[in-house]
Length: 444
Image 1 (cartoon, rainbow, N blue to C red):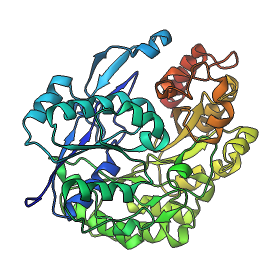
Image 2 (cartoon, helix red, strand yellow):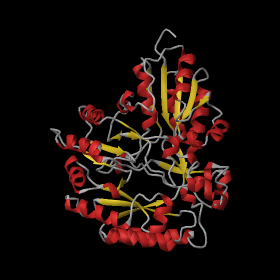
Image 3 (spheres, one colour):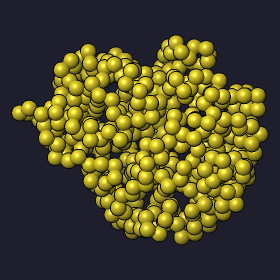
Image 4 (cartoon, rainbow, N blue to C red):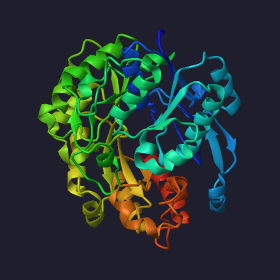
């Protein structure tokens, strides 16, 4: 190919019962886009997950634009009402029509049960751009590869997280274009900064500071997606903050399952350097920090570095369930972390935690007691309804007990369907639990 190849990267719309842009960003897609751009390709972005700008919060978040959508045939028995989140179908068609024909289209898919949106976009692109090569990747195909290969009929290639070499080879062969850069997950410092500059306006930038996790929580797929922990160098993280701040970004969203692990060599140097910057930034952490690893020095550094709130992982306050799901934190360790954050200057309402509900065979009373425990410490609670994820310990052990066929149809893996409702934890109990969370949070 004599001219630079044109690449279109697409974040598709999603079909779901409920969805909110919780600092959402197609990070992996934009990382790959940046790699291709470094090799001289012309990269464009179509992010179909449009948001309601008039309802954007001070922290950068905003709800997705949405409209009613037909319930998938497989899910009609659930009685749930579905919506399409993001651009309407005709708007997606219009945007595609305004673009020149690409040589390569990359489509991402995050949650396993969001695959209909990715399949829809891949098929539309196949019809509109018959000469283009189409690749679908993301967490969904990484966890449900065989299913994805059958469903993504518009794709020429479906890739998992571990297929970077296959992807690079496909791109070079299909486009007759030599890639100057072929970074691997084991070398995160070799990746260019994700191409967030493809957005007209950037309300925040996610910071992915590591791949993998040292823990093996029974409900989490991170160890399957990234078999070992690989960290970026602290100086590279600081360089990325500086890069985006010079382009007008002041909000950063930290994604790291292990940020406080061996904090003296990783988290503290990063936080100390941020605190010394000649400008102020705001940091948010959707991934809960490990409360058992927090000490007084690190708590103070979180405040000095610009954390506007701190989210801690708790999941459950029940000692038996804590041990059975990962054993990362105890009630005593969590309470001490909350105390340390308070001493560091975090006011009431700025400390939040995740409480899991709907785990296989979990009793309603246990989840309610955990909410009460966290709330009594002055912590805001976010209810994390259990999502059955293929490849995790809980999925393998309990999939046969789900009230829907979650092993054969990813649509049933949607936590909004409450796949593990039972006599000890009914849907009515879940509704009551949500009301209880709202009431307790309102008291803080």
